[in-house]
Image 1 (cartoon, helix red, strand yellow):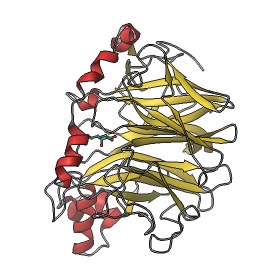
Image 2: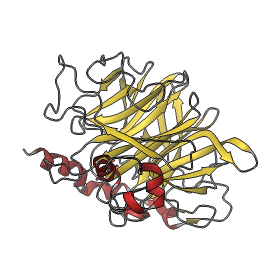
Image 3: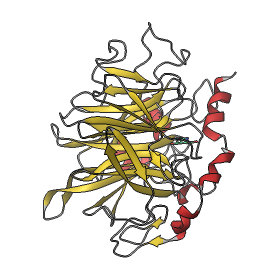
Image 4: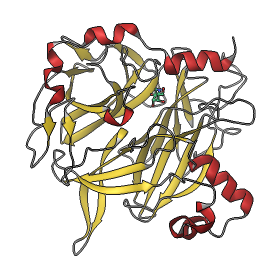
Length: 393
Ligand code: DGJ
């Protein structure tokens, strides 16, 4: 079958079963969380401190230094994700910051998308970033950040060595070969001196591919990288985690010391030394990786577009070692389809307290997609996520 038909099927297929998991547990979905907040209300409308709906979908929460006027750099929680106010093409990456995880200040669109090719020549914001580039290179920037480009799941790391911020995102779009919005299948990388941006695009890349001695689930398009995440280990090494081989196989690849590219380029990279290929042909995406009590836990979703599906967790004592399948980490009523969410982040709120953050996508009004944050716990090497309609950490 044509590759686009297969991929489109997985990206757009409305999973009719998805709605049957919604029940009493979602009664709070219409609650509007605003004003000074002291709890999480999963699935409710969540407003920032200015009273605006938080736009940071497919996002990530990290603690990192943030420059605050008069205070220098101060550790804050930083939330980065897709601003879907204008739909699902050319979504800018928006940043928020917080001291308590409940109340968020908007830091603005830190990686802006470009409305027209002309803007790269005459909008002072883009001229300051890309004015020196040749016409061909500006055409390429427009291909990656333009109105029709797919910019999804942005993630940001602070690089202590360079005292700068590095942003990766799922960069996609049509290609000369296929008139299909998810044909490029790449990872985009941008850098900034500040978490408030402006982030400047470095480039976008295909990443590692299947070693010659293994069965490649999609040999006709090597090194694809779609849904992705970044992971910073406690030894300071950073990794990009992504779905590849037409969304069939997850990869984890180590980044260089600047976090701006792979540590070892694909032609030289060695499997299980520089990268690992996980769960071949299992059709997983939306990876959320965390190290909890010395063990790595990786939650992924199945591939049903904007519809929720059955999540799965894998765990391992070593990133490039043996991974064990632990099954659905969601527990209780509504857990079959991950409480109607798709994974995007698993993060430590404070020492020993972990939070699962999933997107409850609204395919009919994508900007009104909701955030579901729930407590995640490990017991006997198994991660579990339980529903709470209101909770504190
Ligand atoms: C599922 C992915 O996880 C989302 O980020 C987005 O790409 C949708 N597919 C688009 O259908």
